[in-house]
Amino acid sequence: MSAYKLRAPESADFEALYRIHREAMGAYVEATWGPWDEAVQRILFDARIERGLLKVIDIDGAVAGLLELDDRFAPFDVENIALDPAYQGRGVGTAILQSVQSQAAERGIDVHLQVLRVNPAQRLYRRLGFVERGETETHWLMRWSPAVL
Image (cartoon, rainbow, N blue to C red; front, side):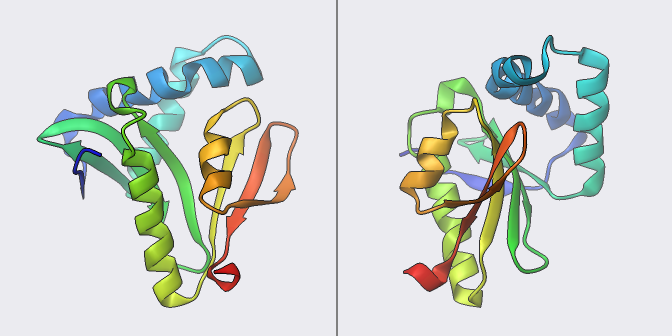
């Protein structure tokens, strides 16, 4: 597994982060809602940046992905995690999610996330102990609880 660090994004990172978002999620967005609408996706992505919860996943100085985590309240909410395809399959996503789980366990709180039904990342989440807590027309709503450890 490649070592990573999380850091605040700088304006110079925004285009790389958007490209990663599109490359990691584009096919799943299109399979769920139809053709990628660049204008809409830019607005939604810019809103994510404005919220201030986005972190850069940095590997050896490269922008390898993004993590959007709201850990201010219980439960923790993993709102978005995306890796550049060049960094997928190396255990980075697993390590990041396990770190989030460890932090939540220390505080005795759950971790929530949602995943598009068409996104195979749901296999990773299940492997890490996330279970379905609900569903929408497009997403599985998932929960991990330290109480089941």
